Image (cartoon, rainbow, N blue to C red; front, top):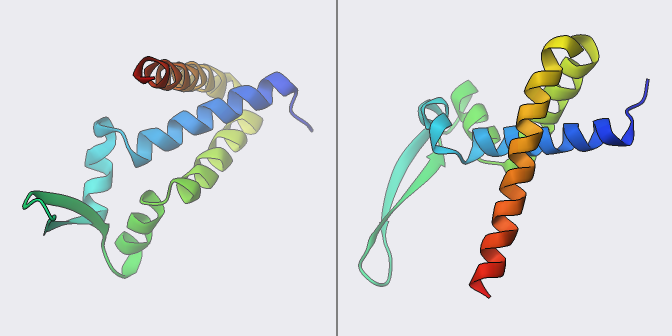
Length: 118
């Protein structure tokens, strides 16, 4: 079995959006929180900055490292979405379309913001 070009585009955009959802979005912070600890540091300006650092060791450390790596999470997101599309397409397709549209919208918004800054 192979994917058509349009299926590949939809899967790519959906994977992009799902990955960003897990790695960066505030709405999924509750999922990431158990796998990170907060570290405070003071910068040269005397301002306190808070960093999230993956826990060390064990399953929680492994998942923390996975969620802190956009590339790693992207592989697993892509695998999940491709398998879902192959084996349960009637459930996967609406999810893929929503994620793909949201991913494309995010890309367009980023390009417009960069264009406006120039």
